[in-house]
Every structure is written in C-alpha cells, then in structure tokens.
Length: 119
Image (cartoon, rainbow, N blue to C red; front, top):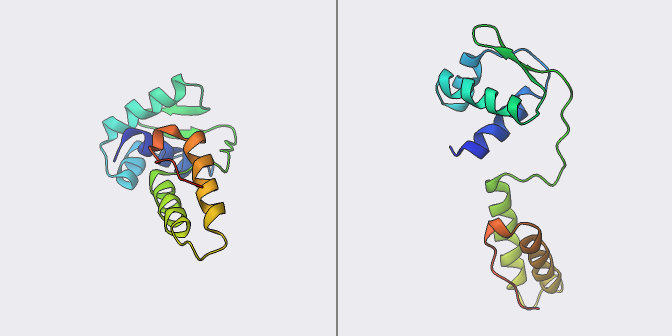
C-alpha cells in the first residue's frame, strides 16, 4: 500500500473521533506499529488535529471534513474506465459528454495521467 493511500485510510478510520491504539491501526492497514507512529507524527506535523502518543493511542480532536472530490486511486480508475467506455460508444448520445468530463478530470487531476479525449 502506498503511503498516500495509507494516510488517507488512516484519516478515514479516525474520523469517528474514537481513541485508537497504534496496534489497532496497524492491524487494520496491514503495517507495523512503527509505521503508524511515523505516520501519526507526520500527520500531526502537517497540521492535522491528531493527538496521542505511543502506548496510549491516537485520536482526531476536531472533526475533519474532506471535500467530496477526494478520490482514491481505485475510485479514479473506475471513473476513468467507465467514462472511456461510454465516450467510445458513438451511438450513445452521452458519449460526447463523457469525453468532455474526462477532459475536465484530466485538467483537474494531471497526476492521474488521463489521455486527452477528442470531442
């Protein structure tokens, strides 16, 4: 699991506001406690409201609202695949809209490496 995905998953797990031990988080994500300790230190250093310490547990002290446009890599891949399939169907009246939407996503998320679609 890539670090970015793991950090995203950690935030999702902790959004309920409950105290979580490093062992519990490590088991949920399939990593070591040491990895959780490093991730929590990094998250706190970047300004996320994470509090806690080794041996006690970790908690998000303030509600954390992520924008609904945050997509996991798997969600983005599924969206792109579906839009490409629809965009390639010349007889479908929504094909042009699918290609247009893919171009918008490619512009917003250049790191996704989505090839440009022809109108």
